Image 1: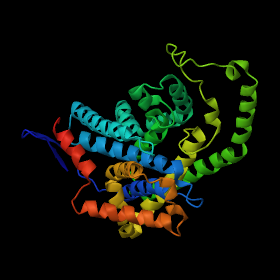
Image 2: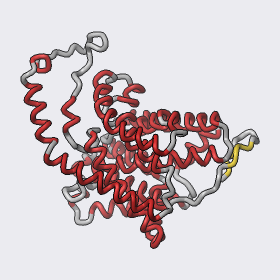
Image 3: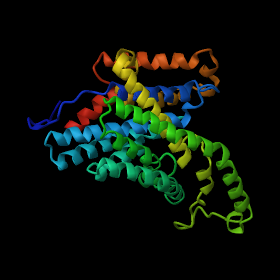
Image 4: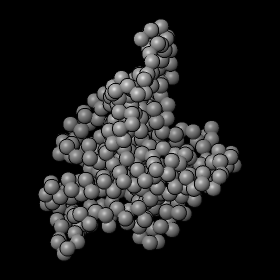
Length: 370
């Protein structure tokens, strides 16, 4: 693949490599899960809540490494890579703020996603081992840090995007870093894929046991202690006081609750374990039955466009005066399947034009600066 700049300048060539269909397919599955979560959630598919974002962030970390390696392997200067990442981050960030401006019913994570692109730049030259170690450390330190940020950075838009709670870049950083490390490995090798599945099982089962049998007791003990602590019970917040005296108390109890998009280590680890298993299975399916992944791949290739569409669709329903909760598609037999099929058909329509509108605009925006 060759990157070409406007003004007739030829950019460094990027090394050609075989595209991993399984990665596109898993990313597509994550996007379909988001649609189901927002429009057709029920008791049978409730597991998609939160886990779809973890799956998406893992795939994004893998793609981030593949993209940066291709650029650098094409003899591009580090300055070119930094500029491209910066320009792409600015575009995604601006798009995210425009979607936030709509004030629709769904949370917008594009701004945090853009900050992740920038924050991960210093680590692109880390060895695979260092990335795995850094990811492991991040699973421990990022959840408490993002809770501190949620308290201290409330109201500071850009800083809040970086470290302001469960929807911030810092909250997703452990999963993204794990994806960056995985992107260094050869995902076409069966042995590597089987190790992914084994690692996912080793992570998922113990974490789920802790979630069910240990966390509730820790949470109960903490809440009992907090209710007996006068400094916490009698705390008064003056919204007009100077910072940091106008900030809310740090919600440490969230560390002991595994809930969708809560940002706890258990939630992130369980979601990452399940994502590794799913990625491994899809890689194995690609080897023998790759054709069955193509519908999911079409969604994965247009993930950002489809993400923007669901946010604007939620806003459009509000403008039309339609209560989204009154349209209970999840209660319809196979309603979630119908939503998934709709997303696939929508992606196929866009692919007839070779690309999604959001991806096309992003490339045009990049060419203005590169």
